Length: 296
Image 1 (cartoon, rainbow, N blue to C red):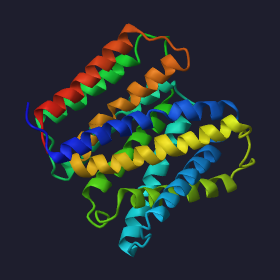
Image 2 (spheres, rainbow, N blue to C red; image 1 turned 180 degrees about the vertical axis):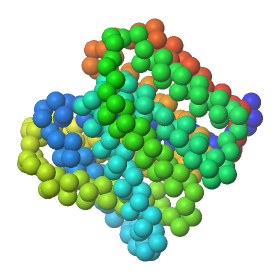
Image 3 (cartoon, rainbow, N blue to C red; image 1 turned 30 degrees about the vertical axis):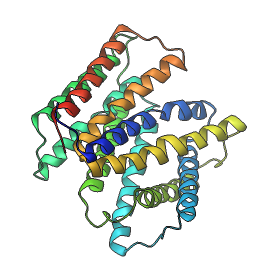
Image 4 (cartoon, helix red, strand yellow; image 1 turned 90 degrees about the horizontal axis):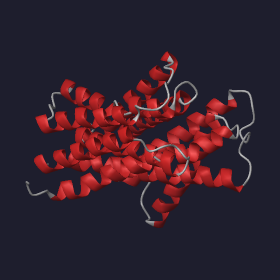
């Protein structure tokens, strides 16, 4: 095994944390949707709370909020991409089963690799192998249950979420104008764009912003969405892409569906099948293989 560099020792754990925390979306989001909260309202409060938490953190650290106009343009793009990804993901839950949606979302490592090839950055063969092996593992995880009806709209929304997320990853990794910005400041502005977008979107739709958001549990779920799958996940994603690159960081996203499936088993009473165990084993083995055979 090759000795891991300092970048790898920081980047790989950050990538794993990204996958695990982003996989917590259903834990907090599904109960809110079941109570009748609109997707726009859920995502607005999620992003708003995240921005407030990050803003407080930046103020405590006495960090400047100043950015250039060029950086503002890039951050606006990142915010719109992350917003699109979140919206498509939550909308897809209305059309297809969460297991299938999770599998389709995990197309993003392949999409990242293809985008990087277009940018003339060709991944090594261990990374390609890890991409396809981990995706195979996710596919196996979602097999063996009841037959799932495949709605083309849900499939398109899931793939659209994956594509938007892929461009988000690549821009963070490749754009030099935002390189001087801290991960916290980058996340603050990207999520701030999302909060504004969902607020405007909800204003233009029928219904109350507070509809379906009632009781302490609803607000705790919104806070959970803001903190773990949003602030922590986005910040660690920025760290991972900067230290180990966009493609490897995206492969570590395999921990997202693993987390979602484990939550379904442990918290939602879903059955842990042999296929799920086999899929987890293949996915984790592929990530370990990638780490053991590549270096920054």
